[in-house]
Length: 419
Ligand SMILES: [Zn+2]
Image (cartoon, rainbow, N blue to C red; front, side):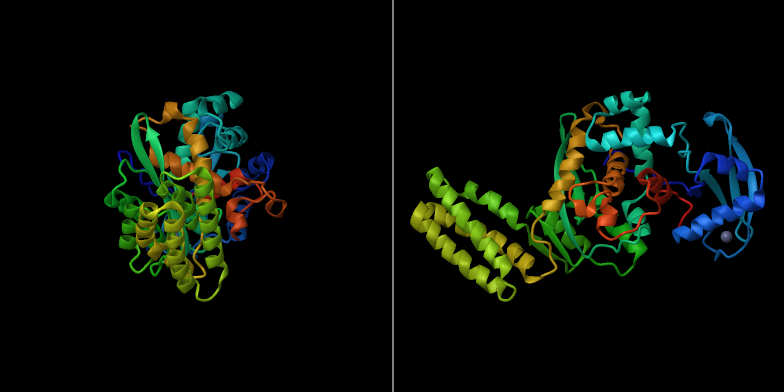
């Protein structure tokens, strides 16, 4: 990774929803009311301020100083200080983006178009901003960890996950995006220039460390992969004792490639039979593993009879290599069985990356940009089925977001001053 995400400095900025700009300007004239409003907002979120390590909080907060934001037409920004540890928190009103002259309503439209797959150049045209400003905005959000944001939404760290690498290109070079998904939420979206176990371990390790920091006893119990060796190795290294399953749907897609020199109808018939076999194995609640082993042996006999011994032998060897992974998936009822949700996440990211070739250069901030895209994936409401209409991925998975406004949620949840 040439450009790891920059470490966020000890930023204690907090975004506070003052409802309207008028309210904010009114409160600027009344220190006591201002503080009360800020504290009430933090309480309502259920968050705490990130004091210095030695401070337990609980002290008084005072209005510390204020500075005038020149770039934003001279809007006054207040800072508040803990009287115990002297930590200073910068209070950003909801209508200001940190360090950026861009208005949130401008950012909202441009980011939504970006998330939808429109090129950065055209997103910038929509709102008369520069494509680079939009790129930097996504990167700015991407400097905050996915684990931090998701756990702030009350989501538990995932115990069973899907993991796979998306193949992409940076100009002419092959690159890989190691990804961890649980349900509709992206927990990790990394960037590596190699697909080796070492490179993948480094990338997945970022998630593992962030999660362990949040919860020292955290362990992943089960992972579903597509069976790629480096992925399996890296996950076993990071999560000792993890159960690694192989996606059954990938198996189904692979089967036709194992069958050579036969007619298309025969190949199709075998694929259908294999599909039924895997489906039935999943349906059986008990003895699923035993049933699968027996059925796989019968299937090899069937392939040998209908497609010849060479094909039969090839399929038998393939089963031999993969069946442990299929068993692992079936032996634990909590294991996800197919990686469809991960593919959906990858497709969403791919739409974006494909449309931004111009920015995908070797010296870009790939990791920050990808993490920013992952935040959008998790927090932008999506509508596929009526049951989840208007909800974002985080809500679909049972998390709670601070407000009804996804961009404001993104601002609040990536505020460095909250704990
Ligand atoms: Zn303090």
